[in-house]
Length: 219
Image (cartoon, rainbow, N blue to C red; front, side):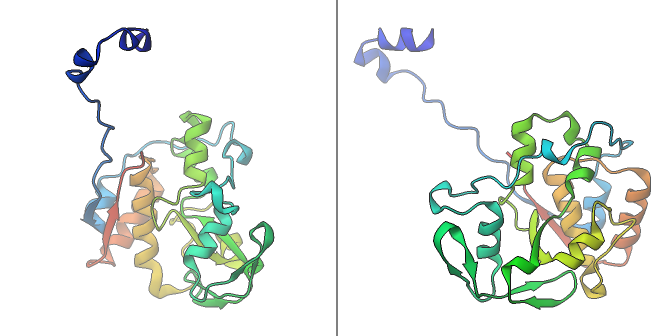
């Protein structure tokens, strides 16, 4: 209907139509870790109906023209020594630092791309009510550095779908960073925490008095 009306207007009339600007993205916010934890919504968790396939990944990534999927794009972004990109976005060479276990990795195939808040945990925490499109956006989120992280397959599989009440990285000196990135990811996607998780996050924040959390709400 609107297109039909617009086609019937004169050039002079079109000149005075208001220009509809795109909705601006919400600004990033930085908070002390304790304040960020206090801002998390609290709710019971439920895994009813969960299926990993309800989060489509890996898709064509942020740049569909580069021939690389999200996994490969994250690997390229996080490489400390850039790999060679071959046909079909096959990566050879290169090196990465897995911060969970302070390990340097020199083979892309030895790395997993971890969802900071695992897909099952996201489902429990609110993603069950999302559209398939939003779950796909979550599963391939490169809009925040912490959402997807290249780590050793060993550390990722040790973590599995556990929250910080159940698992923290083997490298003890990164616990504050990890907790902040977990909290930032939950705030970015407006995901809830349960009481046990919240208590663990409060305890972690008490031990990380100078740690901050920076997050930007997902579009």
